[in-house]
Image 1 (cartoon, each protein chain N blue to C red):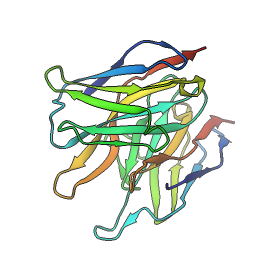
Image 2: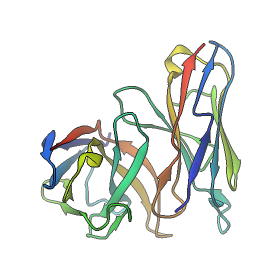
Image 3: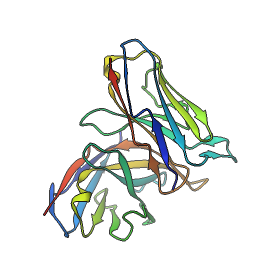
Length: 125
Length: 113
């Protein structure tokens, strides 16, 4: 059973960089049929997609954060990471890592089918 | 961006009664070459991550009770709980994976009346 677990600091100072890691277990991050993504949820709010990364390095980001976000894959540790620069209070949220199925025949990514438990990151002034 | 709008924002239903949640996309999420709607539904309980209920609008994820059903095509979709149970209290989200940026509805909170 595929499992994902987020890790990282729970508190980040305003204007600094938020860095999170997602550890994948029960499956390989190098699976050709998987894209690995980040979704966040501000307190009491809905879900916002941040970005996706493929193990070969292809990335896609939400234009709302594209200028501040980057992601990477560490295949040796079966992890992928998120970095969000110049954070403000608006970046305070629970950050989820998740997997989406990737159809290699069509080149399409599908729905998120596995999620981590989420980690709360608060931005302090 | 495809905007997903759910209605209502919240609803209270008696145990055993039907709950209906609507989701409307700002453009069609029906992919003509395969006739599939790129629309998923998630259930989120307090303190938990979203749980996949349906994909392709109406394909039930393994383990989801059959009192849940998903329907719709194009721009209009519905999630129905035929007989509400106490454990169904949650926020429900629709999600389009037709085009990036992937987007979600604002959520519908289901409570017991």
